[in-house]
Every structure is written in C-alpha cells, then in structure tokens.
Image (tube, rainbow, N blue to C red; front, top):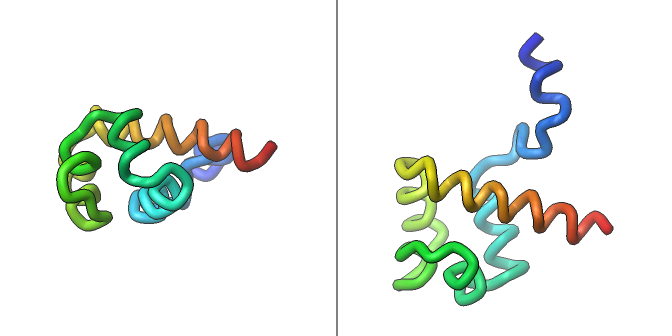
Length: 77
C-alpha cells in the first residue's frame, strides 16, 4: 500500500543530494540564494553544507523540494 501512496509523488526515490546537484547545475548558487534566502546557499555554498542544514531544517527542505518540482516542470516541457 505504501507504493500506491508514492506512485504520484515525483520526489519519491530521489535523494536530497541529487536534488541539490540538479538545482545547483541548473540555477547556480547565486540564483538559488536569491530564490531561497538561506545562508548555506549564500555564504560559502557547498553540497555538503547544504545537505547538513537541509536535513535538520524541515521548512528549508520543503522550499528546496518545491523549487525542485518547479525545475522538473521546466525541464520536462
């Protein structure tokens, strides 16, 4: 039954690290920092520091996941 719930979730099976790699490659750190104003994107950004922050900050992770969904819609069209 859990598989049925995840069937319509476009984030299912995508690791947070992959989300960050894709977003950074598409937008760059400067644009990410403008769209989501968090220090790990604006001051000495790196995948490692961003992962550490996002894993313990649910509101920021939600914003990153929402931006990733927008990114997926752009690249699929």
